[in-house]
Amino acid sequence: MASLLCRGLGQVARRTALISSARTCFEAPPVDPLKGKSASKDRSMPDGLGHTVGPERWELLTRSKGNTDPYEMNISEIKESSRDNPNLVPCTIETRIVGCICEEDSLTVNWMYLHQGESKRCECGHWFKLVPVDTSKYYTE
Image: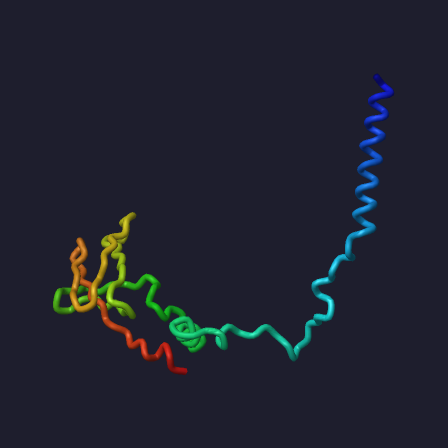
């Protein structure tokens, strides 16, 4: 019984050694991915501005000019409003979702769809209206 166990272990060890030695003999040497590439001050990664078009390019240009919120997505304070004098929400398309935190300590946000050309009233009494944004500036440099 012991001899069978020793013989089996010997065969497993020999097989493992032969397979690993065959792999190292016939494998290609490892490739250096950085071979021929060197860091220098005259070459750098290109910025994305040359590859972008349309609204994405306009967003990058406005961010480079200092406007950190070109699509007006940050939270803004709302003023007292009425049907005749609503809070104006800029938008490039015909509809937009707007959220209103009605009370300062409220845990929920009242979401509503605004459509171009009509004012909408929130549950708390604030009025909102979409204002179209000129999209021709997207495509001019």
